[in-house]
Image 1 (cartoon, one colour):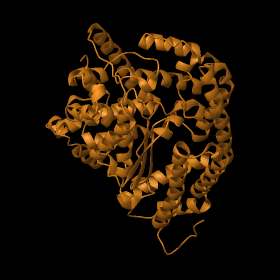
Image 2 (tube, helix red, strand yellow; image 1 turned 45 degrees about the vertical axis):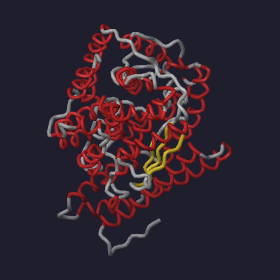
Image 3 (cartoon, one colour; image 1 turned 180 degrees about the vertical axis):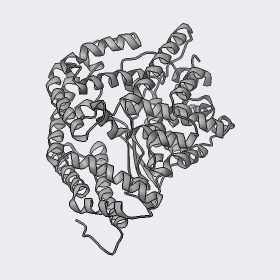
Image 4 (spheres, helix red, strand yellow; image 1 turned 90 degrees about the vertical axis):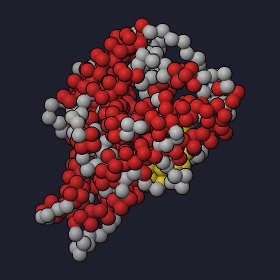
Length: 498
């Protein structure tokens, strides 16, 4: 534990504490990276102890009496700079949230979710929600208590939502999602009326060639090879250990290179955000993400707005044909473009197209709100899930495995997280509209393989600010426009039907 140094200002001492906590947290991320990529199965018991030890250190560091005294001392200081005011605000927020959740509560939640995760995996395998339901009931009960401990003004779900999307409430999300749902359903009807044939990709797509083209696109996006590592794992993710150490993963499929390629682009979008934080502020709120939704916007603007657009494939389709001559030789660029932008209702969220994806999120949001308020019983989830899927997408799952058991989030206690995915799309749509105005020649530049201006645009307007502004405030500061779902909806409505 650090000792109080009275010769240093409270701000400098808090920065030193924050850096120490960040080092523990980066070590935790490294352990997670290793667990998902290289760790042998028998290492799990030790890894659990390693994680618990480091998590306890971070918790104690952030809730110590010394930390509280330093915050109080900084609060009393006059003439704080903008950076100091931001850090004080965010440190106090973090302290309040962490202090309100006792270490005993955190441990109980960790123990409950550990068992729930194992139960979820078994339930999903057996396609039976009933075996997972008792564990989910415990999690919902704990999350209701968590909401009470954290506090809220109107709806208990707001307390959980605020953990992922600071400042956002159900009062603000409800009208956004209602408009999005109505306009999306109207767009789906127009798309359904227009019939067009598409060709499906057929492999083989050699894995080594996939790896080469994934590294190529990540580096063209602006991540230098000296600052990232791209590994393979079952579920793609990104972990930022520091702005100079970005860990990416993807998964390669021999029958369809696009899944691994687009996942690499998505995760690199996250990675560029982490790499774009000011290095000199490492560990402080000035070098951390504004929210989960803002983080998601950085990956979605790359994956959908750019990598699903025609100019991108004017550059990359010839390269892909060269990399996969056997699979792509008979496919035209236009046929390829239509195939990757096919809109078709599907049961599984992670495989949904960009038009229907948000309907999957809205369904989960509606269920989570009612679970936390007590309006919905856990036992009623499968039936309600089925009816909501039928209502919004016109399809229903044949079993729980492709229905309410498809996501890992609830087994981890991550209620309040799902809205960030759709908010990320809305933020991305707003930023993309602003990028198009800023760079009227963006299509020509992307078609020529120039992607760095996009990275620089996002660094200037999003990355460099860290947590200085709340998510909506950050978007409005960047675009000089009030935040709404309109830019994103306009993007979809102008693109579809193809």
